[in-house]
Length: 83
Image 1: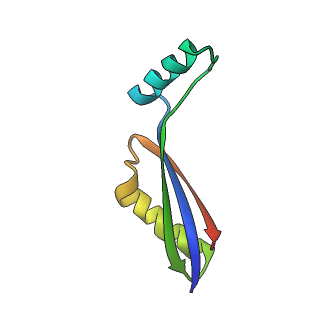
Image 2: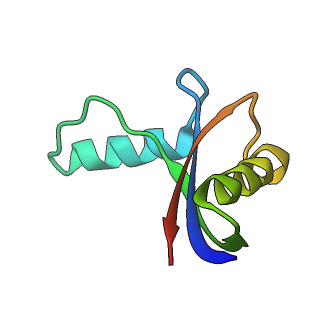
Image 3: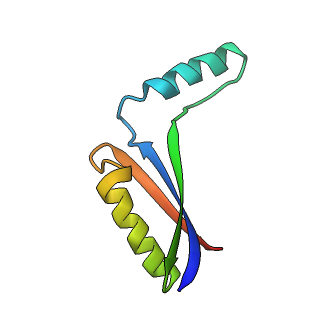
């Protein structure tokens, strides 16, 4: 078994209302920053032991599908690095 750290970034799909991002965007614009768009995201770092990076990705993908993200309203990305 090899130790891996998987990073899962979960964000709302485009078109889904994101009030946190809208509030932050307006505040940044008031501070003089020009923005085209802003989206909020949650990031999870998960340490797992697996036979391969592919196996680690599969396990973490199942975690994301079952708990970390709602596939109806969220998109997510997974990266896996060996520790």
